[in-house]
Image (cartoon, rainbow, N blue to C red):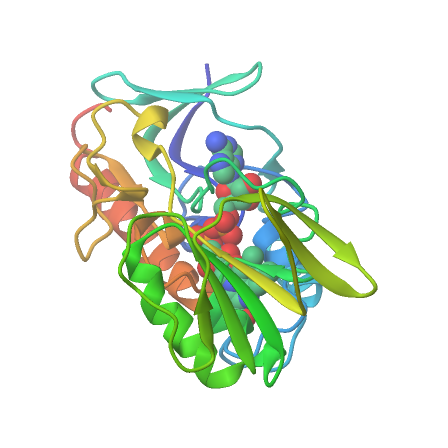
Length: 289
Ligand SMILES: Cc1cc2nc3c(=O)[nH]c(=O)nc-3n(C[C@H](O)[C@H](O)[C@H](O)COP(=O)(O)OP(=O)(O)OC[C@H]3O[C@@H](n4cnc5c(N)ncnc54)[C@H](O)[C@@H]3O)c2cc1C
């Protein structure tokens, strides 16, 4: 079976940048993921904080990324990896149904939300957001609903309250965070997200709430289910500054390594992860891998 120098899992900004850097360093690269790229990229209406490309839409940015890949003859292998096995001196990656082999791997799978609220996925980027920093400006002087799954989201609620006209907060955990200023706290469980008369609607077990936007803020990714023994903290893979994980020859980059969830941070980490993989391969080139 063909063995790659570097297998990169994920076609978001982190994985794409890793593939570009590893290719430029003459490594045999396998880039796996959806060929239409990350949905988190495609769903962004307007991106204002990507260096050199102001006010670009996610679709336009994705097009530029694909052109960059094409200029280097990098192909995307359209597949989904379901398990990775560390075999000692290489990794076996289980796709569906293909199996791939690589001497090093770079995990760039993003943060996969846990169980979504019915209607959440369908409205992502169209009234539903997962990122207060990214999308708060869209709701200046408007009403927003925030569903938070952890105490750390309370800072995001406060931030949103400085921009939006009102914030209805639905904490899904125990908290003493109370109604204050333009923030109203509701202890109710979301049932579904819908639209009605151009407004977003959150249905709970007891009531229906309307607003221009709904933020669903949560963290959940079982990265350690993909590769046994991988050290994680919550949904994030633990890495050092070189994007090295606790498993030799396994690197991680992008949202999967932790907040802030941002394109430029993901791309930057993709670059570091690829250089670390190259460094690892070069150091081990005298011993057969
Ligand atoms: C609507 C929206 C707007 C946003 N706006 C902004 C913004 O304005 N500015 C900003 O900086 N950030 C913004 N973000 C955040 C940004 O999208 C993320 O930080 C960024 O996409 C993370 O890149 P990534 O490569 O780490 O992961 P992702 O973009 O999540 O990509 C992960 C990739 O891995 C693939 N994958 C996952 N599991 C597997 C598997 N098992 N096998 C194969 N492939 C797999 C996925 O399909 C995907 O292609 C926004 C996000 C959303 C949803």
